[in-house]
Image (tube, rainbow, N blue to C red; front, side, top):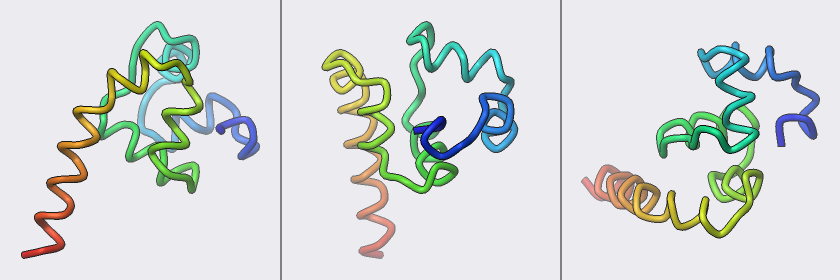
Length: 82
């Protein structure tokens, strides 16, 4: 996603307010992104959180983020409904 958007790790890191090594660790799977980081990355890259999850692609990643994303969506729906 980042590369398809034409962003270097350094530019993406700056947009995300993290360091370039952090981006490298996300991309290698050494560190997993939090649900809030996924949301922020989707805004920076103009895509959906599901697109971000696909970027890191394994079923393990999907399972890891399923519950946090579900909580995030539930919170968003509560905000919209109030």
